[in-house]
Image (cartoon, rainbow over all chains, first blue to last red):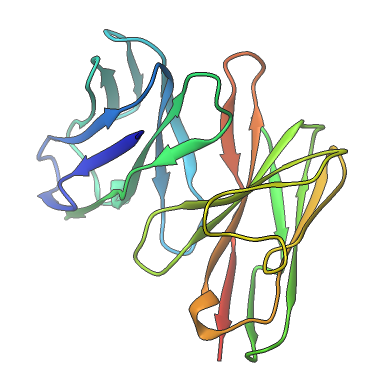
Length: 110
Length: 115
């Protein structure tokens, strides 16, 4: 069964303190791995899609990487506005639907 | 990308009533999806809505409870029928866009509270 596990559930960092969020997955033929940011009361905002092991993508203070078993979302020198829930999702084989992990709630203290 | 709007943005309803949520996208898309996000939880797919055919429901969701319409390539509705407090959730519309390497984009959500 396709599965996505995110860790940690919650992460509190000081402003400027870099860290990484983990997304482990088990899927039959990965078609794509997605990272989203979700602010309270809003819909998920698309960040990145990764398609194959070794691929990396960056956007401002965020960098996503992918291996055959997991993905990391690295946050460099975060700011309070980076506080949000970060969701990982995978799309398998020829499926149209994507499966979400439970998310990591990130809080950045000034 | 795609710009998606949903109506209403929030509502408070009495148990036993029904609510229809509208989803409008700014471009023609083949696939639209409806998700539920219960308080403090991640997203759960309710159904996939394709234009010109019946929606495909995920395990645990049935058409009588969540009827879906997809009259054209830019619009869909989800009805939450005979509501109970357990239906209190955020309901999210999503579309697949971007060609062969498609990505799902989400609307702002409809926050539903059932009393």
